[in-house]
Image (cartoon, rainbow, N blue to C red; front, top):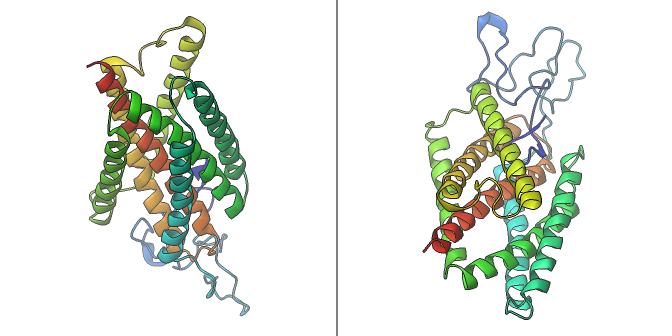
Length: 297
């Protein structure tokens, strides 16, 4: 299934066409497998691979499938690939900030380049989203173009609207990431089917509302319905950050399940892709709120 991302773009570590980790079918002895279940427990009758999508059938007749012993994804793989993806994004953002001037004579050209990079990044993200396997080159190229866009936009906001806005947005994003990680590991956030359904429904409504606002702005002029400016814009920005935090929890759950199921090592690139997109979402919302608050001064 595709989930765990503000643009509904990433294939999760799922099983049996459902959300990973939340199979409640009874097992031998009447126990149900939930978030605390054993992903390598005895498979369901009639579907020996329902428990683990990466399992390999044992050659001995009647033996349950086992996860592959080698080439599994580990947390180190996820950290390394996420660091690589974010590193490419940060480097290209820094280059765009330094090399694309935003003075009165050049801001139009630089902003145009940034928007073009954002559109290319969006196309690459959707291409990766519909691929069955992760493409490291595609993911890193997406990160590069996304970095150009963020570099230009951050430079404009930082130098023309709110001094220090970019650093404030970075700090805010890091704080949300750390807070959600702590809350998830401590068990304060329980990621289950109900949580997943609520987050996806809320995100869909949020995106559709923003699209309607954009259409009104394009064809009606001004700020559209006002959802991205003024006090209402701040409220929707906070909602966007909260949604991003929920998607981080879904990302953490999918990574945890992928490791538990013995997902192939290349799946770590999908984890890096999803985490990067979620962090970009949160950063953009922080930057937007800071710009709105300073524009109203």
